[in-house]
Amino acid sequence: MNPSVLIAPDKFKGSLSADEVAESLATGLRRRYRKNLDIDSCPIADGGDGTLDIAVAAGFRRVYVNAEGPTGERILASYAERDGVAFVELAEASGLRRLAGRGLAPLTASTYGTGQLIADAIARGNRTIVLAIGGSATSDGGAGLVQALGAQLFSAGGDLLERGGGALVRIERVELADMKGRIDGIEFVIASDVDNPLLGPYGAAPVFGPQKGASQEDIGLLERGLSLWAAVVTAATGKYAAEAAGSGAAGGVGFAGIAMLNATLSSGADMVLDLVRFSDRVRDASLVITGEGSLDGQTLRGKGPARVARRAGQAGVPVVAAAGRCTLARKGLLAAGIRQAYTLDAIEPDLSLSMANAGQLLERVGEQIAEHELP
Image (tube, rainbow, N blue to C red; front, side):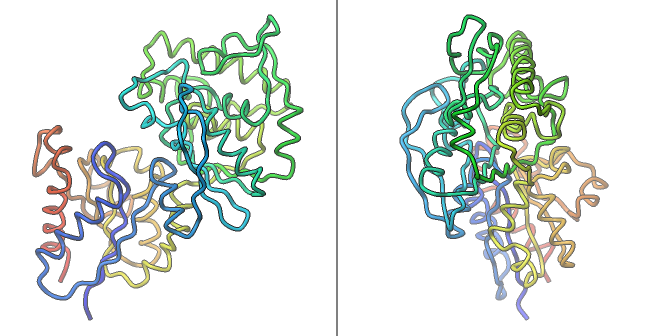
């Protein structure tokens, strides 16, 4: 019987999409393994960039909407729908990639465009909204998102608040009547693999703000604004969610979802694995290859490769990983269910060269896996 390899990687951020990673690994496997080899390419995501594409590949229909990008620029964005369920990827309208060439905007970036996508999906009759919230450019606590759904945010002077996390330091009250009317009867599910709270040292601003361009001064401002936002929302809803696990995800979108949309939180990686029917496909595999750009402590907290390894382990199928780098000790890998990691930096230590030539290097990793892991 021919060996069967299931290739299920996430993207290598800044280098290759999950599709490209799987393709490069498959090329290397076939080049080295001269016998017959069955390969099943199954790119994954964990709720960030690429999640929408996987939903479309799984049979959802893409819908295009004229919306706002993170800093108010007009963009053409999309979501996907099927049978009354809409799949919205926050990064599609409010992600860091939308600011490429523009510069980061830690205080003014808003999730308003994501709210516009949700509003369109509801208007088209979808009753369940699945919101994948990885890859955001924002730290606005989800304020822009709910503004697009009809919430009104007011300053102490009675003026409508402008968008962005920096503006939240001036918030005094929020009116939700219009929003409640629009979302009545709608089920919200937030796909995220982040368990950080909204506030405090492990909260949205200090942990995720720097990757969105926030300085230490900006982080302090954002923290004050998010704290006021939490107090105002609690007063309006009677629901305190600032300490809830996952409320700090995507700059606080998790908080808005829990407190204002009555959303349930679900693992983004597990949701994607369900979409691609991973548990069915792994049954036929003799080896699973997973991976991402960096295998590290975050991987062990439930990111895509760890979820792949867990399900493969349940099926009794061995797992190896391909990565740009791996900072996990062997004990950590084994605890995650990964028996070996093959890295690009072991071939090319220079990070810039490794990222620039990631495809070719992954082909060589594929060859190494064929040599050491296949009979």
